Image 1 (cartoon, helix red, strand yellow):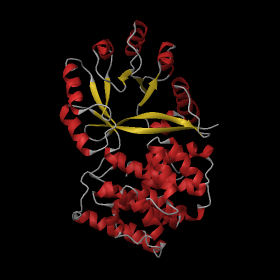
Image 2 (cartoon, helix red, strand yellow):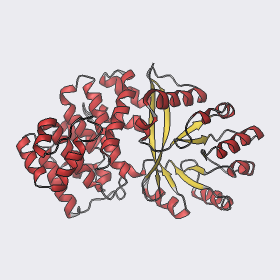
Image 3 (cartoon, helix red, strand yellow):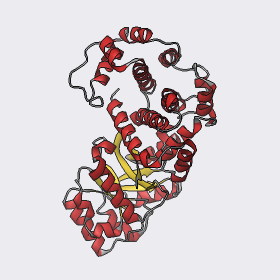
Image 4 (tube, helix red, strand yellow):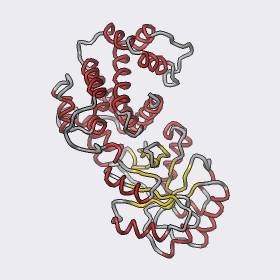
Length: 401
């Protein structure tokens, strides 16, 4: 039996990655588990099976702990620099729990209070916490302001959870929140049609060139060789740990021979996407890369394996609207894409749409929607977690571009 484990980025006030929250979302047979079983399965899968650095990329991870797991001392079994102990909102501040929190603080653990809603009885927990998470979906703006005023004398940092728009991010930032969690960074900041900056327009033109079916390896070599930065990034990419090479590759031609036309085209696409989104949170670029690789792996495991390159492109381009702050339909009209790919990107319809549906559902922890899309594609659900870990490793290896 396989379990589904995902991660969600937590960004700081500069929209830089601070940590991830690890999330358990059931098994491949659709069953859910108790809170205690969810946490132990999640910890086992990430620390003991795959290795925490595979999913966390060396960042600390927020993990929910139940009352029983806290009282049994389970958090102390894991490194304090790797785990942020997240205490669920339904855990009362009993003398036993407060004693556990005191001990964890003394051992160097960071303590976060999840889905915090102010009650005077909780102030003893607040005094031991480092981070307080406030859910923007269940708390009104007035409630959030009142909570921050009541806790102003405590040396805690506030994390805005389930932030879904830039307006909410800006509101939380003005109130003094230090950390932000949600999909605000994956949506357009301003959803209106406007002229692209000239350098982004040129990148879209280059993107159009690379996505042409007629583009040859020789043409790709010309594109790379004329751009010193692109050549440098190619050599850095091919000599990264993702490829596990023994000897280094030192020329563009050698890199093209080694990778082949398909992989070189993919590399250029990755660099273009990263350049397009230079003014966006780095997690947006990483999300696009992870999504692309995840979609490709799904395609390779079902009847669409011959279209895996197009489905990789589907995932990679699926966040272009957020990167450019332009409606998706306006962007893809400038690209030489087939109608099947365009329909999947613009309206999530057609035979390619389930790949995007599965990837987005997995990211957003919508277990039922994910399983439904996987069933439609005919993908073996027991393989999905391994695919996700592979996609994370791929995205982390390329995130420095």
